[in-house]
Image (cartoon, rainbow, N blue to C red; front, side, top):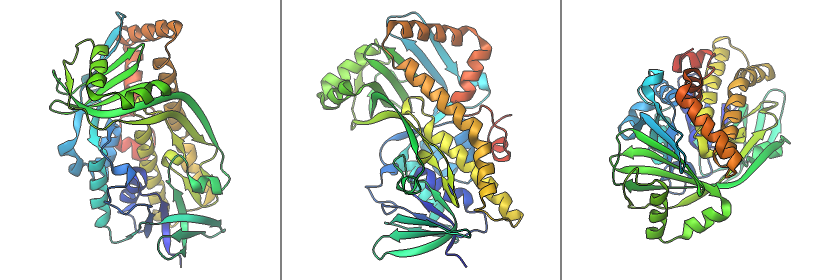
Length: 405
């Protein structure tokens, strides 16, 4: 008899989402998390926001989490895209896809609280926190994991899911290489208020000082993202508040009015990290441990949540057939089913990052041609919207339930 059917290493947004998705199944699930749930220091549940795609909204609705998010989820119904000093621009509208919104901006703390509340009600779930998985031993019939947190102990599981982040220690321990593409840039993120808010309106602005984005959070509050080379971002992080707001306001050319009430500024490097393999024995690599994308296109967590939905269905099917949920053939089938979406989203994100953050004039001309194409070519526009909304190429059973064919 094993301690767990599924042991999830990492209780951040992805790991907790998987635990919630597995809740209806007759499986004993354990979640190992380095920081106690609900503690202020838990990095996944901080004051940042996440832009959830329509597919993510439907997945959260399916696993019963969305009602706890809806009140604080600010819909993005239109995105205004422009480049400073150029005539090319376009507006992307939710009505074009026949969806309520192109996305929903939700504070991470709200997602964390909703997931924690969901998990606290599950009788078949055991939380191991604060704790971490320090060693992993692969056996034919199970995984033996050493869990350190207070007293060290060994636990057995039919399947171990490594959702322990882009620098995954489990991935490294198992000898799974990770390919890293460093863009040499960082994204500065903060919250602020605008003088002329537009309900449901978001902005993407390309300038010679970097790429700027505003995502609605409700009323006059917006999440602000400024992407530029790392040296410039380091200077912006310590710029006096009034000077920072003045610099950002000037780059928007008055489109949103004055900027005020600046929140805490944080920065994150723009990198693309992809694991060379997503399985090793009875271990599956998930979330940022499998693929960490540049935040410039807001695709990373949404892609991981689609992985979660498909994995939950694959395991559910195995339970119905009384099959081994950690079998190599089962995990290989999951990886194969996710390859198209994962590769397509990574390529899409990489293309946007390289194209929309490059200051070269030749790239700027291509960027403007692309904006004109989005404005004038319906097919190109629809494909871009489908990919951005996380609704492109969905074919598996779980995804058929959360997005159109």
